[in-house]
Image (cartoon, rainbow, N blue to C red):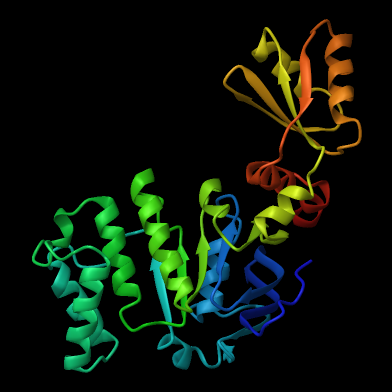
Length: 318
C-alpha cells in the first residue's frame, strides 16, 4: 500500500505491531516518511496513532516489526535517536510558573547545549516565534496559541532533524492553528522532517503525504491529491425540499457509505462511483422524494469516511 519514496526515508517501519494483552493496538503497519516533508497521521480516537508515534520515537517497544529512524534501529538505538528528534504533544508540557525565557533556558540545559550556544539559540527562537515582548511573561498566563508556540520553540531548541507532533493544535483557535502551521512549514523548508497527527481535515490537506489508521490498521496512504482523486465519481450532492427526510431515505439506499447535511444540501459518499448520481436520483424518486442530484468534488473528509468504513477493514479488525 505504501510505495518506497525516491529518496532515503527519515522513517521506515515494516510490519509494526503492538499488542496490549489481547488488544492489537497497531496491526502490521508499513510506513515510509520522506526527509524534509510534512507527513500527516489521521485516524479516529483509539486508532493507534499515538501508540505508533511512541514506538517510532523509541518510547514504546513494538511487539513485532522493524523500525529505522534517521538510519538508527529502534528501539535498540533509541538513546542515540533522542538527541536528534523533538517531540510535542497536545498537552502543554512546560513549566507554567517559569517565564518564556526561563522555560527555554531549562530545555537548553536538558539538551546539554553549551551556555553561549544556548543564549544565541534562545535569542533566535524568541525572535522567530514572536516572544520578544513576552520574554518575562509566565507561561501559565499565556493564551493557548502562545503556549503552543512556546512548546514548539522548546521542542526545536536543539535543532532536531525529525519532529514528532501528537495533535499539537487541538486546544487552540483557528487563527493560531494557521500561524502554527506556517512555523511547521518553515521547519520543513529548513530540512526538518515532521510527522504530525491531527483530526482536522484542513490540516491534513496541508501535508505532503498522509496516512489514515483505523483500529490499528493502515487503511490509506498517499498525497492528499492522489487520495481524493481515487474517489472520483463517488461523491454526490443532493438538493431536496426536505433535506432531513431525504437524508433518512438516502441512508437506507444500497451502496451509500455516508450522508452529511451541508447547509440545505446533502453530501453523499457512495461505495461505487459508476452511475452513482443516477442511482441516488432514481432511489429517491421511487420513494416519492424528487431531488436535484449532481456529482460533487471529493475532499479529504470523504477519503477519511471511505477508508474507515471499508468492509475489509472492519473484517480485519474484528
